[in-house]
Length: 281
Image (cartoon, rainbow, N blue to C red; front, side, top):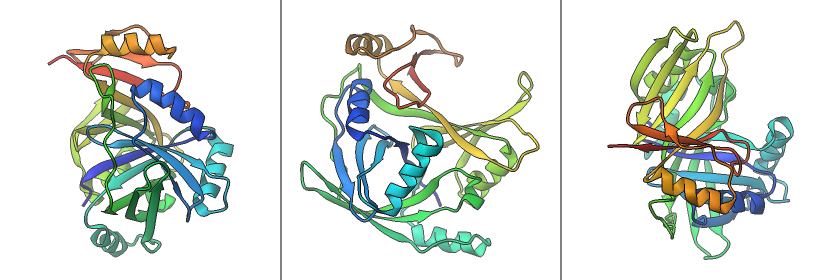
């Protein structure tokens, strides 16, 4: 059903400031800056090898998207706010979910226009109810027309791939049932971590991982996006570039996973916990 982690959404208050921060972090400018007139939002997109990052802001206009961003910022401030799953069979997914008793809205048509290049992209969205996603904003997308332009300026010091996204849950079994059984995403790891009394799940698709940290409690089932880990080709070169740009980073050290080097990004992330990782193959 689900073919890829299409992209991740960060809600931001000031799009220009967020673009400046992430341009320094990624090492290149976004390949798309556009508007969604029907939603009242504006965005900037940073493609990487296996997905893309969307910075999303209210555009000063009225619209359901602008209202959602304003409510998110008021409640949580800037941060990681949306998980978007991709498919080429969105109508079939909707029908299957409804056959399993999920109440869904109609498919919505989306359109984005790039400010600088005049390009247009269109897509279909299936917004998932919080009753299904346990409070996490998520939707399914099927791209229709137009392409996301490639970025320029990639090098061994830039961010080139999403390694994993971290999601916290108090109901790991329910998460497994939804993302594994219902969405059909491959479960690559399911283990109990006695050290902290929880459960860890790894779902893999399009060369990235949804890492789920499960710590059961007595509250209602709840899932929440937490942080991102970006893969780099040469972490020492990336570290040097970021320091030169004035981005706050920790020192490079060995990662918990064997044959990895990591460092944490302290600034320029719009409040998203961010890790850089190099796999030493």
